[in-house]
Amino acid sequence: MADDNRRPLPEGLRPETLAIRTGLARSQHGEHSEGLFLTTAYVQSDAETSARKFANSEDFTYSRTSNPTVRSLEARMAALEGTEAAIATSTGMSAILLLAMGLLKSGDHVICSRSVFGSTINLFVKEFGKFGVETSFVSQTDLAEWRAALKPTTRLLFAETPTNPLTDICDIRALADIAHGAGALLAVDNTYSTPALQRPAEMGADIIMHSATKYMDGQGRVMAGALCGPNKLIRDIFGPVLRTVGMTLAPFNAWVVLKGLETLSLRMKAQSEQALAVARWLEAQPEVDRVYYPGLASHPQHDLAMRQQGGQGGAVLSFDLKADTPEAARAAAFHVIDSTRVISIATNLGDTKTIITHPATTSHGRLTEAQRQAAGIGQGLIRLAVGLEHVDDITDDLLRGLSTLTTR
Ligand SMILES: *Cc1c(COP(=O)(O)O)cnc(C)c1O
Image (cartoon, rainbow, N blue to C red; front, side, top):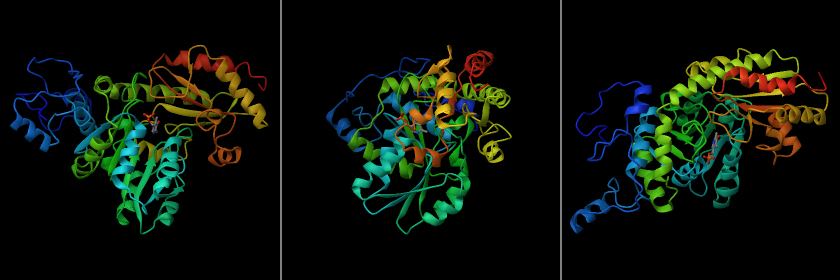
């Protein structure tokens, strides 16, 4: 798609520019802002043209198949991830559904990090388990476990980095080598870092998956998802599945995310800097036992994270409160959460508004206590998705609870 009908963009533009300038196929009106095409069908000039367009799925015929606003978003996402193509979906989970439907059949085997998003685990185990797809779960950080899990039927390795809530990092390049050595593909969920910080395709990943609901929208307004990758996967495999199955992104949501992408780089850098400041501040608080944040030198994979994530830690951090028993830890965590007056108590991330979450009773609430212990998610753990309020207002808000803890 030409980015301007008469002046194609020059080669070699930088990501900040791509996020603003790609995917702009202007209509005859020459609108400056991205057009929002709320239409289900497209009028054809005659039956011959209609027949030709229906034979070529690249043309606009019906919005389950393609829509100009959605197409703009796909072009912009592909440009940012540095892949040939992208396909947008209604949510992040429907992007993983599309990935699995496109690549897997009964008898296939998937290797997945144990620490990925909870619904991702359910999708592979509960939904695709029904159809005879087997999934092995391995350590986020121990490459030997990934290698040992390989089988002749392994088709896909699936990773997410950093993880929620403990910010464990996996080595994307090493996982790509393991996958390719076994004739499998590597898919990376890049929701947390976004291409503003981390471009998995440059490290050998075959497919990059997004919940654009998070930082790509960036202001908590719409649900959206995407897969980015080469034409031979996106256009030839995932496109036909999406057209049949219909996990299509709504044009309005695509338009909101398009506008969000224009400020993605600024937001990711600013929110990462704020998160680093909050993480350092938390490390100095006597009530805090440990802070999990890739930007801190104390993070066990700090060097790998900085290499992979463009020198930034991202906007999500977690911290553990000091306590003698799980009950005391939970009471302390609830006290800190309930003492906030600015930060939102919610279970989401990727917003300009800072969000505080108690993983053990929300995102990881359905695990058994033993599973939570194994995952390192204690009752005293608090996750913070740092937004764009003044950083001193965020730390002041946390101090309200920390300074009045009875264990102090
Ligand atoms: C939110 C999220 C998803 C799922 O995306 P939805 O848009 O909520 O469907 C997948 N992976 C990660 C890492 C997420 O944070």
